[in-house]
Length: 82
Image (cartoon, rainbow, N blue to C red; front, top):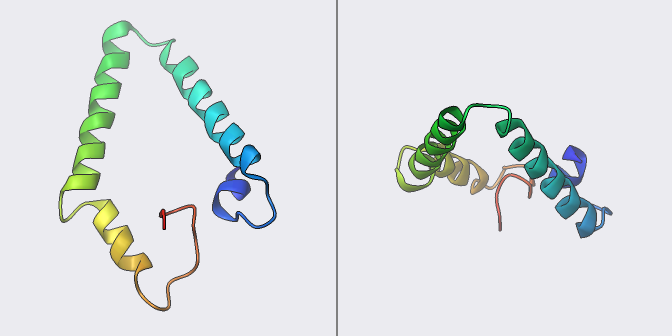
């Protein structure tokens, strides 16, 4: 599955999508074992981190875009949508 995400050569898209759906189901299943307040707290923290990563100029997404925009950057389509 991880190889299908990062090295998309010769692997059908249905395998990529199936792996991502399967991973999401496992995460949701794991969250069901926590108390209600703990699961909601984790989801809120994840949402806040996502907002930080996307919207701030010093976030990891900006660093990743800067790194992948260099001419000698490796071709890794799983890290950044083109």
